[in-house]
Length: 412
Length: 146
Image 1 (cartoon, each protein chain N blue to C red):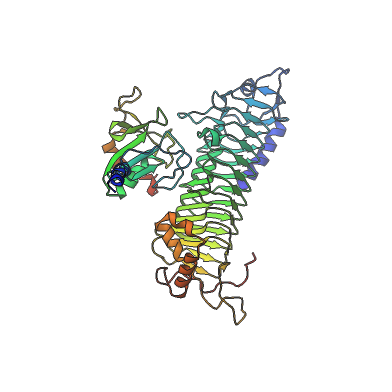
Image 2 (cartoon, rainbow over the protein chains, first blue to last red):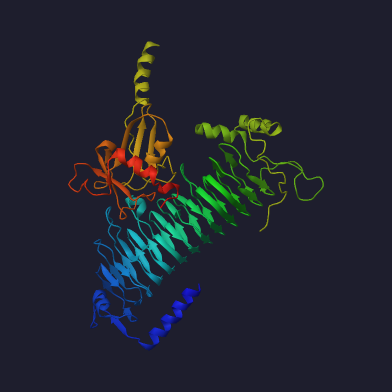
């Protein structure tokens, strides 16, 4: 954070002394952005007036420029390649509308490609009909804020990612709105990034996707109606707080996929109307605190070896299955959750049910082995089966139990 | 009764088929890493001798998954990077490892046809199927190796 502040103050300082501004418009002396970039020196500002600019492969190398679009000038790459290629420190781009980035399976054409750069900001741009949106490689200390990204991945089945980060660190990705690409926000080998208050909807694969990325936080984002909400894979130390996962619905769909994750925290998230709210596979030391699981098919499905996961003070409201397990329970703890399926009583009125709650239904085992059995879900026979299992557990793991189920929904 | 039997025989034969089912991009999930398979340039698939279908979003997923299984495979094929959507048998493929290839699971690995004009096996970063296994399992990006 300090670095960023320093960068801004430095930037302001430089621009006040050596301020030169190049204005680009159709009637101006400089009528193309490429020409403006050629003329500009480090520290200059390029102001692009409203209009249509059919340009691509605009390369900015080693120049610290401020590029400002007035009233969203349109940069049309005409499906020919990458619009901006930037390798520079201390630059900023804002207020542009970049469109028509061609798909390719051999090169990652992007609206804005940033490589080996430091201290930059990409703000309030509109990207439409794109392949990759903002692609960052080996860069650090940047802000990507307020961009609106739209494409048509669902109909084309071939698309890049909205914001794609590779081998980078210390980025802030905030207030962006990404719809209709492959992965809304994708991080691979990206560390120490904050992803805050973004909206990722209608994306082909994931709203947000981490691969091999450690020490990241994502807070207050909305993930709705994506192929699947968020996939966090092969990563460590991820903080996930106050996000909303909605309507990730489909046979292979889930709100959140955790695969090979260690030391993560989930707090104050809301999972609503997902086929599977959380699918956890090989996760260790995850704290699930005060999350709401509402009307999901499965609230939590745990597969493979998961050690030392803690589920505390969560609300499980009207899910078809609260918890499903394959494999053994390995030191996982459920305590003080609220379960809407709980039918016990509280004689001493301390707010804690006197009878422990077993969240795994026998039927969920049957469905695991024979998925087609799901059509029996609301049948009386299954009700009887689950009831008899509740009375005398034979198949469900005895240690999977919430000893202090709450009588009232937990307020957090 | 006999007629019924005649009806059943082709059904049984079909169900044991080892023909690979086409991958439904955007719908099928990888059998190893669970990710949805979307990229036609990097996918892979295998069919066991008993007819069980395995689909993968990346070649590195197939290599790792088949290493964990002991099941005998009838078919193993990978996406042709130069013709996305086409599959080639692993024996016919030349595997390329290069930083510019952003394969889904981080191995930077793609396959092309052996006889393809851009294939140059002299280069240090190409492998045939047999060497690929050794290479990938030795430096495994999926197990956290970079």
